[in-house]
Length: 273
Image 1 (cartoon, rainbow, N blue to C red):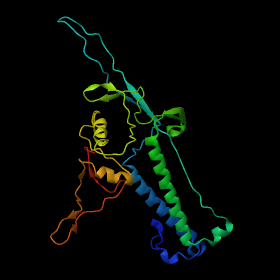
Image 2 (image 1 turned 90 degrees about the vertical axis):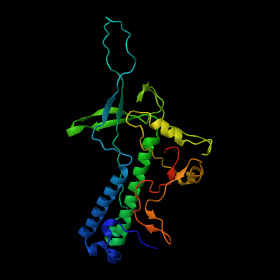
Image 3 (image 1 turned 90 degrees about the horizontal axis):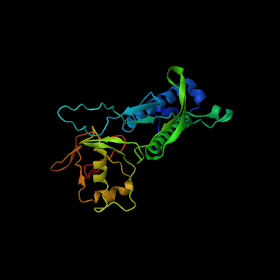
């Protein structure tokens, strides 16, 4: 079975059966550091699809007012009105960690391969932790309280702040193109299987493109493997031709790069999604 090798340990396979003490603690530590740096860079690249970085704990989005004009005659003077409407969002800071389970004896006898194994395990745990928390932040439909302890420049934090979910049908109103601000609920589910009579994708598209700046936006749906067959069976499903392959008379030729990242297999398009 092929041994999985962390980034910083590439080229050190011939030393895997050697003790860390023999190879040099600093050399192995550098390999771990390089592995962590490469892992962090890859994770950050993937998270850009779902996560936007910020340095503020809480912010408020002001919305344009709604209503209609006041009726006036030829000498009428309208009463002044003020804009209104806003919603607040806040961001928690959550952390996680892991430690190698070693004692004085096992640490002294540790091999380079064992150090590589521990490094990969820690990276896998980090990827799992991030995936769970990112998905949970999207799927958690209720608000919750986070205690913000530390603010910018070492100042005291804001104290208790409310972490809001996606639009969940509460009283918060959002601007809608060509209409008055409305409440919204972006948590949808269906108990029945996906088929031509129960196709959720057109609804996804119309819901997500009704807001200012989102008209004709590209909407992507990530689906689990167990739904692939039912989605591809939809009448309006259109399989996307493989842009990486050029059809030939005798054999097909690979002409593009293989896509990487979240949802690295593009199945097709259905209901503009």
